[in-house]
Image (tube, rainbow, N blue to C red; front, side):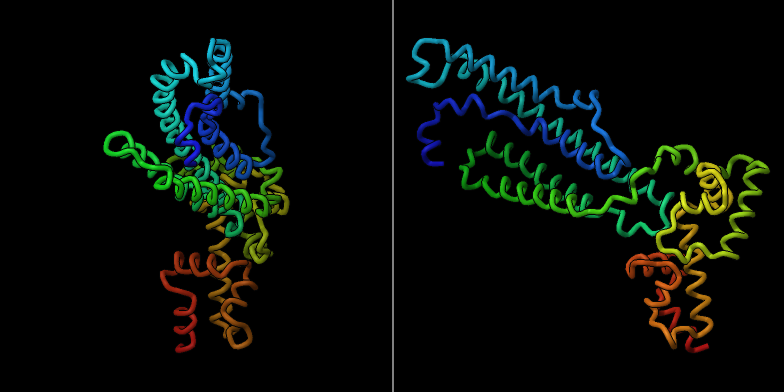
Length: 329
């Protein structure tokens, strides 16, 4: 870097392309590819990369112009680079980069939390599908990005920061990108394939303000009878599509029956039955033969964290506290 600080007028300055103009769209589509079933990059999605392509074209134009001027090989710096690019364009690009990144971070956060909301209406166990590592990455990267803006303000208005005071930002940004790449590569998203999340756009809304028609009431009764008689909730991998096939009820109608009739999303609806089954087994003294976690697994839970969270949410007490109370009875 000392060589670069000494000999700043090199051709490389023409090719320091603002790749950060592509980071926002790349991050957005990366998360979208993981959280969207059967995702395909469409031609119109390429519009998101127009800014970086325009900037690349601009760089090519000023390089060709400056390279054709007398003395360029000696100075390796031209008129457009000095009087247009460094003076006006680079500051403008910096502002555009920051605004664009803020926008895409907001889009990506919205995409992720919409995904988390939707899986609650399709899966009974969402622990392995919540993709909390994406949330963690977004928070870390947002912090690094906001700090880079703060750092830029200090460098512009207060004191010029040497590269030795800036290196750690690039280092930790690289680590964050490597982290999300590795996690994404090893994340199993097969359960998301062939799922039509669009079904939920109309059915996930509670319909308490409108009359539920007779057909939905029949579906509700059928669902309730089936749940109590067949106990499909004991299957830890039960999802909305599978239950729809068992009941021979169309997925949209089943979703509406659960959301409107029981005023619960699919995840809460199924886990409510699982908690009741756990309570039933504890009341019967099953804990003498099985651990508390073993009972949870028998009742359809597949994660200790999910079991504890759901049980406390529905009973206002922890599983261990409930078990202790039953022992005293």
